[in-house]
Length: 100
Image 1: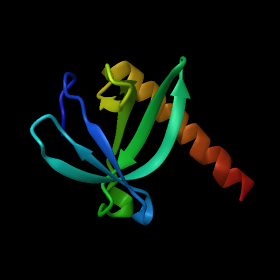
Image 2: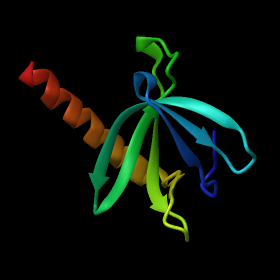
Image 3: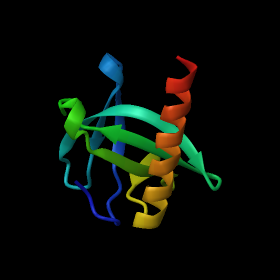
Image 4: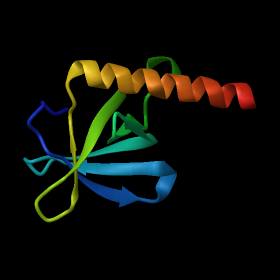
């Protein structure tokens, strides 16, 4: 997908919580938006491949930053932060399952 230095520009798509990301090379990729989370005062987004099978879902964690014009850009956080945000996502998911 992207390395730590890539900025991705989001494009909203109302259908099925899809988000289109455009990388610095102009490549377009669609992801399913799972959640937006706060971690240590920063915002992160959790995405997955919209065509993935339930038993093979790969989740992507991206940090939401802003460029000099105030537009949202997504960056790949370091592994430790991505792991912590993922754990928070899992915890939130488990709490929602317990409520149902």
